[in-house]
Image 1 (cartoon, rainbow, N blue to C red):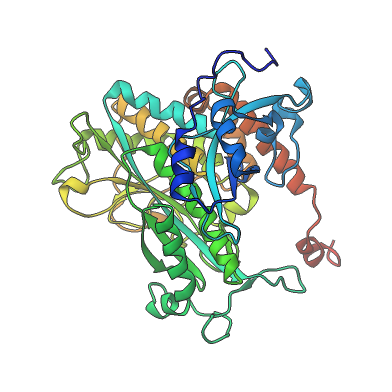
Image 2 (image 1 turned 90 degrees about the horizontal axis):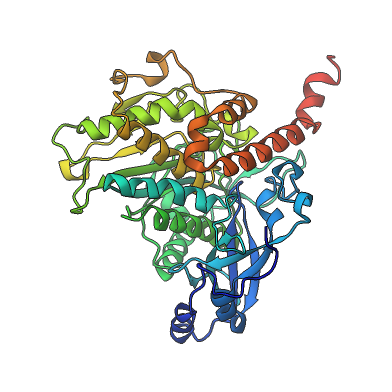
Length: 465
């Protein structure tokens, strides 16, 4: 491996014309955040001054390879082979074309741009989760299909004050000052009470050309869901989801709220999911899943079968942490089994109703804590596997998916990591090296999490052991 900067232009380099045009249209911008999403979905990177950005486009910005081998707390995971094995050497990070835009919630006029990470010799860095998704999307070229994708984000807004017991609190209504208590799903009053936050959030999305659409009050106090419009570009759809999550957090902070994408922030309350909607355009731009039959055509049935067959292997991605598994409960609107249905929210793979040309699949397993790049990579891998092998799905669930399915998704974090590690299919689609890095990080997190003594240990065992 070479550790010198290449003399020839790097394949990911551009002339920086995008930055020139952006600054011409946004002359007030003073700084730019360089945003890299790591395996845990945490945004990392640097803030550069305006005059530095052109060089980042043409020469890249060196970043330590260990940044791709961190756990969710930011601690090194030596077992990834990205830290001391090679002296924490640099990689080159380049801006992703088309992702430079404002960060309108910040007090100083600031822009942001997504980075992808590359080896010095021009190869994609295998440990970058964005490249893992790119590898899966590329497989669709041979099928003459283009995934059309939308992300649906659920999140809570909570009180920034942590209780004396170390627990978070439900948010207070900005209008009444009273702490939220009751579940009022789809309640318009909740949207009105948080209207200032939601209005600024929509304005911030518009300022970034993010296609945010319907907002609803979800199945818990202080929980909301906002949908992003379908994109015939899977990578762009997830880049927009990354930007939107940052925007939600940033605007919430301005309103003295914390927006959290924890899968299960409250015991006894519903969890938050990342629902991924997708269909396939053929080479003529027509929806290949279009059908008057609500169950969809054969190609869509095969995709569903592939999602169900690979769901156990991908659960470690869909539910990436200890808290993730607290979301999977009977009657919780979070699926607990690999099953499917039409117009049925008790299943993991749902076919929504609608006009024939809008026929698509909704994947409902991922928690809101999942890395969106990896979540979609695993979903599209399952769908591709089903379509190329012309798989047939199991019997459809007509009624209660919680009661009618005997099979269950892994309920323990350690089990899902072990299943992922054994999966030849996940290694094939995501890349063997990426699968190694992901497994090493999750094993380290598992070990570190269970090494901690929590308040619950004392409640259960201090006097009873």
